[in-house]
Length: 290
Length: 160
Image 1 (cartoon, chains in turn purple, orange):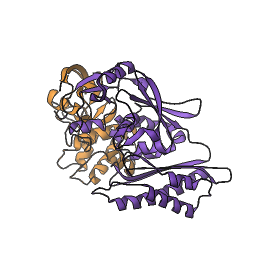
Image 2 (cartoon, each protein chain N blue to C red):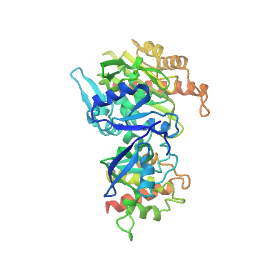
Image 3 (cartoon, each protein chain N blue to C red):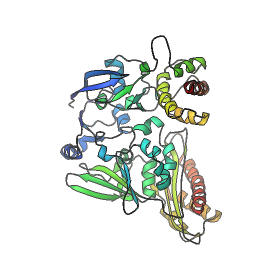
Image 4 (cartoon, rainbow over the protein chains, first blue to last red):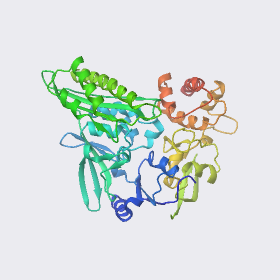
């Protein structure tokens, strides 16, 4: 047996799952896709006393668009379903472009957006994307529910703002607006590996073709997803050309603090961040004009 | 630390099994040790190598990243379920043999199960699509080229 002993409960309702989590707190973990949690259990790096399996809770999965033109994605929605949903490309082009970079087909067949976000791996794509899109995350407990801005959700490597009795149940993201373009790019050693650096960006242009809004986020560039505030603010109000892109890329390079590893030094990561930012901004700009 | 057990009913390759399993028993170990279906291979046991890939409710998944208890009420297909009978191989297996798509064979069951679903859904794949679909399965012998050839041949044979 690879994992340490634990008790397993297949939840029959959200209430039951939340009740158990309230009772066991940090001793219990929710099991969604298990594609990050189970490897750490197999290494015995994580030894929960109880696993609360939320896979039977179909009401936690699915994508809908609310009256305010925001996409609401249930936490248990698998990447497989986002990949196969034709609306993903139209409404969430950033996610559509990032999906092939998220591990491998077999992992995406099980992996869920909520599990990915709650795991909060700084090298992971989805945390950087929800921060870039200024999404909101819904946390539920027996006491009620609250919405957490993506920027406040990630508090460090593998740490989130979720309380021990809370479950992440839903992700809310804006539908891509008119005259906007998005781009996701990543460099990894092999297809599906963790990113050495990943860059997500969205641009919205005004009627004169000037930048009305810019948002740039990065993965594996710090302790959590990094939002490049200076670079994003710099672009607003400008007509985006080669000079502006170069300046924004430099601002991104100054804003990040990548950890470095045996595969890529900090300097190399910073270099890649600049190159990818420039390419991603140029691509997003072209798409916004199309 | 305490543990518990669960009685599960699971369908594997069309046969229904009823077993009692400890919570921490991985699906891969359940298939191999409890059901004695040792065709599913176990490589890294942390979701990287793809050797343990099985088809779970129609989707290729890593059986080392699921618990047997989660399989209660679900249907699984393993490599033992591919060949139609003892005398014949599945076109995927024949094509792997004909193209020398394996050497040591350790990764082969996982590749077969991954590609079974892929070819069902993508009957006329190009090489790039095959490589993308194969990206989650490590093979340290072949260099993949012959596996890609085998999959193109298999796709052709399956189209009839």
